View (tube, rainbow, N blue to C red):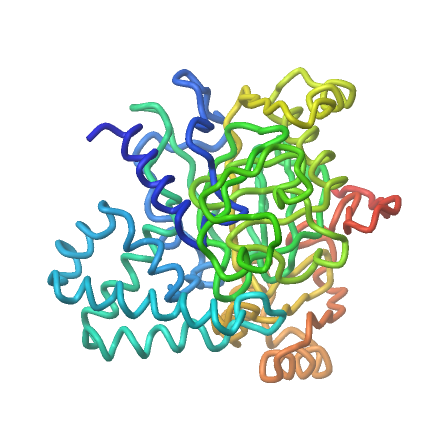
Length: 435
């Protein structure tokens, strides 16, 4: 089977399930032209290692597979083949997994439990317990690893054969030196870098705990204006008055949750608009990065400019003028998109400890030490008060985040937000970029 039919099959199968919901790459909207160039600044000439495997310990939180995620993956023949060969699962075990994961989808449908603002402590733990019960410890571990890796890749590689590939930046709080997008899931933050300079920061909405954002390296290769939407067979769709699973919702319809623009970043995820300001900084999507309409228009313009497309706000407005007409614009340069999970971040003399929203157990003293050591510091070098504040924040989960002043590490770490767009439509607070 060639890569294109496999991609279409994967997309069509996922469309029938929850995870593609508002985050589906529609068939026909392929991400990249055959001759799409690849960023030349930090490529590697050999196939990249698994994004999770190449990440730092602080980044290695793998968004442990949930039953709804597994339900989507089991609809893909390639994943099932790998589960049989690599995890040594039998046909009977595959069928049992399908029944169990579908039962979880049915439970969510009955209880509407997917639309929640609670944390994700329950979903992965419950899934792990059920997998152990069905498969035993060893096979459950193998399947979870396989699912996480498959999930991180975002489907078949769409890059041209022989092209150079990207990789996750190593080390905690790694700062890009090239052009790329960095999403830190627990911080509800997305940054656009151009040639190593932070251009703009956006506050975002993230996937619900049952439908988490994947973790790993993705690529943005096109911007789609006025996208259509095909509702999945999902509990949250059942609440919509004018949406029927499998029936296409036209571009510009008030029932289309994608908003005016979507940027595919590998199945099943998108960066898209249409979110209300109240959802920014919260759980807001089914496996996607959510922005308001104003945010996504601004981000699309800056992303295309960073990719060397000749584009202006007037051209963006022209593409959006006819809401019924879909326009797919290829990026002149592929932009890597890092989906990170870092709950401990040092930013210019301030230590941020974020809530572990997907229950990845990353708020540990070990990870704290690694973050400090990456910047030439040590936990022992902190004052008694700083050290106590940091360790207390690790033991007692913060509601959102704890910020601790560490002036001795000023000018070190990840950049502070630049021109922060928090989705409320107010002028951003500008910050001086440090060189």
